[in-house]
Image (cartoon, rainbow, N blue to C red; front, side, top):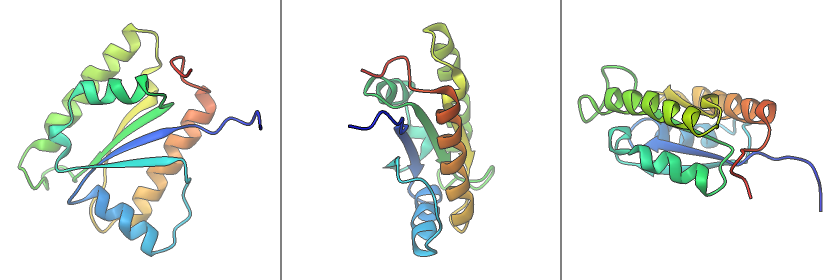
Length: 137
Protein backbone atom coordinates (compact mmCIF):
# COMPACT_ATOMS: atom_id res chain seq x y z
CA UNK A 1 0.00 0.00 0.00
CA UNK A 2 1.36 3.39 -1.00
CA UNK A 3 1.80 6.20 1.52
CA UNK A 4 1.35 8.78 -1.22
CA UNK A 5 -1.52 11.15 -0.47
CA UNK A 6 -4.20 11.41 -3.13
CA UNK A 7 -6.86 13.92 -2.14
CA UNK A 8 -10.52 13.03 -2.33
CA UNK A 9 -12.46 15.88 -3.89
CA UNK A 10 -16.20 16.21 -4.35
CA UNK A 11 -17.55 18.57 -7.03
CA UNK A 12 -21.22 19.51 -6.88
CA UNK A 13 -22.04 20.61 -10.44
CA UNK A 14 -25.23 22.15 -11.80
CA UNK A 15 -26.79 20.12 -14.57
CA UNK A 16 -27.09 22.93 -17.09
CA UNK A 17 -23.66 24.52 -16.95
CA UNK A 18 -20.85 23.02 -14.88
CA UNK A 19 -21.83 19.39 -15.47
CA UNK A 20 -22.07 20.09 -19.19
CA UNK A 21 -18.64 21.74 -19.02
CA UNK A 22 -17.28 18.63 -17.28
CA UNK A 23 -18.71 16.50 -20.07
CA UNK A 24 -17.16 18.84 -22.63
CA UNK A 25 -13.78 18.63 -20.87
CA UNK A 26 -13.97 14.86 -21.24
CA UNK A 27 -15.00 15.08 -24.89
CA UNK A 28 -12.12 17.46 -25.53
CA UNK A 29 -9.81 14.95 -23.80
CA UNK A 30 -8.56 17.65 -21.46
CA UNK A 31 -6.20 16.49 -18.78
CA UNK A 32 -7.50 16.98 -15.24
CA UNK A 33 -7.14 14.98 -12.02
CA UNK A 34 -9.10 11.73 -11.78
CA UNK A 35 -9.69 12.13 -8.05
CA UNK A 36 -12.70 14.41 -8.63
CA UNK A 37 -16.05 12.82 -7.81
CA UNK A 38 -18.79 14.76 -9.59
CA UNK A 39 -22.26 15.01 -8.10
CA UNK A 40 -24.79 16.37 -10.58
CA UNK A 41 -27.43 18.66 -9.08
CA UNK A 42 -30.30 20.38 -10.84
CA UNK A 43 -29.18 23.78 -9.54
CA UNK A 44 -26.46 24.86 -7.13
CA UNK A 45 -29.16 26.84 -5.32
CA UNK A 46 -30.54 23.50 -4.11
CA UNK A 47 -27.31 22.53 -2.34
CA UNK A 48 -27.74 22.76 1.40
CA UNK A 49 -24.89 23.44 3.79
CA UNK A 50 -25.55 19.96 5.17
CA UNK A 51 -24.60 18.43 1.82
CA UNK A 52 -21.23 20.17 2.02
CA UNK A 53 -20.65 19.14 5.63
CA UNK A 54 -21.67 15.54 4.87
CA UNK A 55 -19.11 15.37 2.04
CA UNK A 56 -16.38 16.37 4.49
CA UNK A 57 -17.71 13.96 7.10
CA UNK A 58 -17.54 11.12 4.55
CA UNK A 59 -13.85 11.81 3.89
CA UNK A 60 -13.57 14.55 1.28
CA UNK A 61 -10.36 16.56 1.54
CA UNK A 62 -11.87 19.39 -0.51
CA UNK A 63 -15.27 20.25 -1.94
CA UNK A 64 -16.23 22.63 -4.66
CA UNK A 65 -19.50 23.78 -6.09
CA UNK A 66 -19.63 24.77 -9.74
CA UNK A 67 -22.58 26.59 -11.19
CA UNK A 68 -23.79 28.95 -13.87
CA UNK A 69 -22.16 32.25 -14.67
CA UNK A 70 -23.52 35.26 -12.73
CA UNK A 71 -26.83 36.33 -14.24
CA UNK A 72 -27.11 33.14 -16.30
CA UNK A 73 -28.75 30.72 -13.85
CA UNK A 74 -31.54 28.65 -15.37
CA UNK A 75 -33.40 29.08 -12.10
CA UNK A 76 -32.83 32.86 -12.00
CA UNK A 77 -30.88 33.30 -8.75
CA UNK A 78 -29.88 29.80 -7.67
CA UNK A 79 -26.18 30.41 -8.11
CA UNK A 80 -26.38 33.60 -6.01
CA UNK A 81 -28.06 31.66 -3.18
CA UNK A 82 -25.34 29.01 -3.48
CA UNK A 83 -22.55 31.59 -3.16
CA UNK A 84 -24.16 32.90 0.05
CA UNK A 85 -24.45 29.37 1.41
CA UNK A 86 -20.81 28.65 0.61
CA UNK A 87 -19.76 31.71 2.64
CA UNK A 88 -21.83 30.43 5.56
CA UNK A 89 -20.41 26.91 5.16
CA UNK A 90 -16.87 28.31 5.20
CA UNK A 91 -17.62 30.00 8.54
CA UNK A 92 -18.93 26.71 9.94
CA UNK A 93 -15.84 24.85 8.74
CA UNK A 94 -13.62 27.44 10.37
CA UNK A 95 -15.51 27.09 13.68
CA UNK A 96 -14.96 23.32 13.76
CA UNK A 97 -11.26 23.55 12.88
CA UNK A 98 -11.33 22.78 9.16
CA UNK A 99 -9.61 25.19 6.80
CA UNK A 100 -12.29 27.15 4.89
CA UNK A 101 -9.97 27.04 1.84
CA UNK A 102 -11.07 23.43 1.41
CA UNK A 103 -14.38 24.76 0.02
CA UNK A 104 -14.79 26.89 -3.10
CA UNK A 105 -17.41 28.04 -5.60
CA UNK A 106 -16.69 28.36 -9.32
CA UNK A 107 -18.85 29.97 -12.00
CA UNK A 108 -18.43 27.76 -15.07
CA UNK A 109 -20.50 28.08 -18.23
CA UNK A 110 -21.64 25.09 -20.28
CA UNK A 111 -19.12 25.81 -23.06
CA UNK A 112 -16.18 26.17 -20.68
CA UNK A 113 -14.65 22.70 -20.58
CA UNK A 114 -11.15 24.12 -19.99
CA UNK A 115 -12.47 26.13 -17.01
CA UNK A 116 -13.85 22.94 -15.47
CA UNK A 117 -10.50 21.19 -15.91
CA UNK A 118 -8.72 24.20 -14.37
CA UNK A 119 -11.06 24.23 -11.35
CA UNK A 120 -10.39 20.51 -10.80
CA UNK A 121 -6.63 21.12 -10.95
CA UNK A 122 -6.86 24.14 -8.65
CA UNK A 123 -8.78 22.25 -5.97
CA UNK A 124 -6.47 19.23 -6.22
CA UNK A 125 -3.41 21.46 -5.84
CA UNK A 126 -5.03 23.21 -2.89
CA UNK A 127 -5.88 19.90 -1.19
CA UNK A 128 -2.32 18.66 -1.76
CA UNK A 129 -0.99 21.83 -0.16
CA UNK A 130 -3.34 21.58 2.85
CA UNK A 131 -2.86 17.84 3.31
CA UNK A 132 -5.49 15.32 4.34
CA UNK A 133 -8.68 16.60 5.94
CA UNK A 134 -8.69 16.50 9.73
CA UNK A 135 -11.86 14.41 9.46
CA UNK A 136 -10.30 11.72 7.28
CA UNK A 137 -10.40 8.37 9.00
